[in-house]
Structures are given as structure tokens and as C-alpha cells.
Amino acid sequence: MGCSVTAEDFLSWDPKATQRIRFQLMDPKDAVNGEDPASQTRHIPEGYCRIVHQFICEVQLGKDCHAYEAERRMIYASRVTDEFIEEIKPFDRDGPGANWRSKVLTPILQRQLVGISDVYSWSVNRGVMAAGYEPKDPPVPEAAEDNEEFTDDTDDDLDEDREYSTEEITARRRQLRPRPTILHATRTYLEFDPLEDQKKMSEMYRRNLIYIREMRWHLGVVSNHTPHKSTHVSFFQLTLQNQDYLQECLSNSAIRGDLPGMLLLQEALVIVVEEHQRFFWPELSGMVRRNPSLISDSRTSLCHVIVQ
Image (cartoon, rainbow, N blue to C red; front, side, top):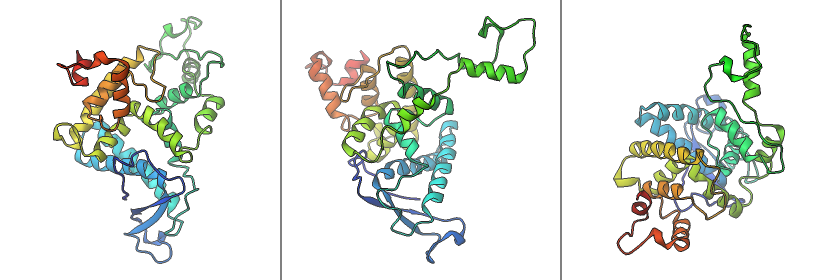
């Protein structure tokens, strides 16, 4: 499978345009109009090309890097692209048109809009709850610890002299770990069309991609500026380390840089270390204008200042 994405058009697309992608069919019987099953083409809405290209890159990474996370992402990306091919293969070469929406890729883009990574189901659930929550809503009950072990001290109402069945334990865990409601899901998945308003959607993607490691890695790959001429594999490992740092910093604070163009200091550090300065130059330069102490005659590196 193949398509084209560059750093210049990473978050740019024409809602009324399509782009050609290439793929192979495993079963020759699936080819339409006598086309070569080994060389199939379809035109898809341009806004889907970035996420398709990301998955293609992750599949290749999993072949080059045998780390657990790289191989896990390779399997996931392969499954998603296979499902997407199943969606588009019934169409002719012209594809479904620019107004068509994919059932496979659209939910992923909708989560990326609000900074939710498609890594694990529990993190998606938690992210959907946070993204779909508004101040006027009732308070969200705090979830239990992520430890799957059920112990007597998880709830004071349990009878210590009684043995609980697996079904009862499961039910209690669900009470302690709130799930997204229909309202949360509606706000996350139905409020925006991720391909329609390019200007507004690109601003949301731009602000929240800092929280999605896979998007930052993909940006580095298409930019061809992986730090210190490192390979995509070593850059992948760097983004893993930075993601741990970023999550640890933000988990201890209720503050998150939700305003367009406004970066937290920890976010700026990750951007600089991964050498995304050119892409995020408007945000970084805005930080310096608002806080001139971040830069001086003897310290011209924002990264150096932040580390200090």
C-alpha cells in the first residue's frame, strides 16, 4: 500500500480533493473491471492520506525494529490498513469521492483531533471521557488504580468473610472504573467532521499532536530530519522516552495547553528535543515573545534554557 505525504502538507488538505493510493489484493477474484490485483489504485479523500501514510510507515518500522511496541504497532497498523482496503476495494479507480467518509479511519482522526492516541482501549475510554466532559456536567467519579488485582481494600462495603464470584468482581471493577457515556461519545465523535473545515481542524490537530507519540514520530519521518541523522528506529525510541516524560509531567497537573498557539514548557522541550522547531516555529517564537527570559545573548538555544 502506498501514498504520498510531505512535511509541507502534513496538516494541509483540500476537503474537495482526492488523492490516489496504491495497494495489492490478496485474492485476484476481488479485482474489479479486470484490473491487475497486484497493482490496484483508488482515489480517496485527501484528508485520509496522512493517517494511511502513518500506518504504512509503522508497518515498515515493525519490520526494521523488533522492539515490542514497534511490533505491536505494526500488527495494529496492518489490521487497520487491511480493513480500509476492504472498504475501498468495491469502488472503481475513481474511488468513492471527496465527500465519502471511512468507517475505519474517521474515528481515529476524530480522536486525534482531541489528542487521544489509539494505543490501548482503556486509554481511549479515558480520553473520550475527558474530551467529552464539560464543566456543567456532573463530576466524573475517580477511577480505581490501573492494577487489575481485586483486593478487599478496594471498597469498604465488601464483606471480608465472603468469597466473591468472578462476575461480582467484574461488576465491581466496572463501578470503580467509569466508562464513557453516550454523551461523552457524542461530543467526541459527532461534534466535528475531521475532514470538512480544513483551517479549524488543522489547528486542532496541530495543537493536540504533541500528545500523540505516533503523530510526532510520523512528522519526524516525513520531515526527514530525524535528530542527529539517526534512523527511524532510534527516533522511534526517542519518542517513546519523551512520551513517558510528557505524560509524567502532565499527569501531576490539571493544566493542559488547550489554547491554540500556547505551549507548556514541557511540551516545548519535547518539540525541541525531537527537532520539530520548524513545524512549531510560530508557537515557539510566541513563547519567547511572551517570556524573553527563555532566550538571551549567551543562551540562544531554547532547549538549553528549558533543560536548565
